[in-house]
Amino acid sequence: MRYDTPMYPMVNNGTSYSYESGDYSDVEIPEKAVMASIIAMPDEVMRWMFGELKQDCLIAHTPINYHQSNGLELEKVQIGTKFYKVVKMRRLRRKCVYYLQRIS
Image (cartoon, rainbow, N blue to C red; front, side, top):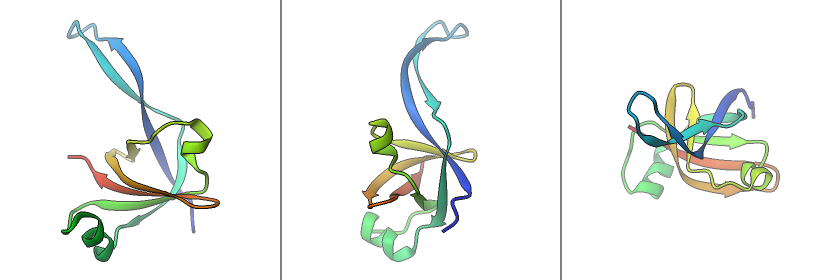
C-alpha cells in the first residue's frame, strides 16, 4: 500500500471575527497533513453502506490511528480541493480505514 496522498483532517477551532461581514463565524482549519492511501469505493461496499450507488465515494487508509494520537473525532477531511464527510471509520491494529463521501 502506498501512502502517497495528503489528507487534511478538518478541525473546528472555535469562532473568529470576520471584518467583511461583521459577524462571528465558526472556522474550520485544516490540521497537519496525514499521508493516506486513497482508493475508489467498490460498488458492493456502496450498496452495503448506503443501500444505493453514490458518486465520488472513497476509502482512505492511514498508517496511524489519527483518533488515538489527537483525541479528536474526525468528521470532515480535505483531499486536494475536495471536501469529504467521514461516513464510517474502522480502527485496525496498525492503521485506520475511513469511508468517505463527497460533500457537495
